[in-house]
Length: 493
Image (cartoon, rainbow, N blue to C red):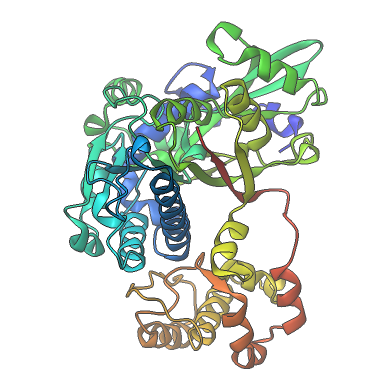
């Protein structure tokens, strides 16, 4: 998004008769709006976007494989050191007291926890790891935690699961050095992020002010009560009013940054020296806070911290004035992650063992093959960009899923959630509904599910009649990172 696009004021002032707040830094409003979003629309989340953990299993399995291998290797190393290391030479097993606390920050619907624990239990044939695990799901929203606990595949792991209502940026009451593994998926982009820009020798930050359009404001029966509830982040009070998230209109302006409110000033300032004037840069303060907290919580010999999220590690992209700094999904703000700056902050905090890799490479390395998502496959279709009607893309997606299901088989049963668009012609809608009903329950669970190269190649005979080209798909499997990609940010204490 260019500077001109960001700075431009709304031309039709009549469309903004009712501000519902004052100008504040964008990270302040992001935290405010996202807090309300999860309380008012959290159960609708998958209508706006899907995550790699909400239905698919392959990221969870890759994490479980990685964890099991590393724990077994660490245990073997302790046994070799003898009694002085705290392990007993008389037993091949580590002592029962060595509880392994795994934290998942932002557990969503519980699917990642369920698939992780199921895979870990399957791998652990000798009972060396799973029985020692305490899996702690952490979220600042009690409703989310309660919903995550109800995932049906967690029933077999009730004695392993615990919950903690708290903010991952500062988990007060959790003992320092008590955690073995921390995982978070698509959490960082929801956390407070500033947008900074160099301008005339100064550093400025984006401020925003929320408004409702004239028509939407007129539909609010008690304006002062609505504004008070919105300002107080009173979700219960807002439930009596019409839905408003999709109708928020934001005004933007820029103010000189108040450095006293910004941690890691030196690291951020040094980073900005490599950025051109008038180019907005995301500064993910919430993500930085979780790095600091993870470093505090991890035990000295812990397996480590992993964050999976969308962003860039390319300075050319960060220096591009047209890059997409954020998006809105159902009213919720989601920011791209500046992984280069996150790495700089981690080093500032004393973290030295940092690994940054593409998420698909992390998953593929555990499977010893290339992987891509269903959305990546769809992007290879020669006509996908020329489809004029949205329902035509729905038809292609469903038929592609049907073709891939011939070679894809999940160890879990999931109901594919794919609402059809109303504008589809009746005969097309009927046919697509029949196809959806016929899909197997252990087939592709989601449009962002990971597929292996073998599954795609074996399904080529069914993909080609739909218009897919084998060479285009194989090229996409080995394609380099795009401007914004999903990355795995990992470090050990």
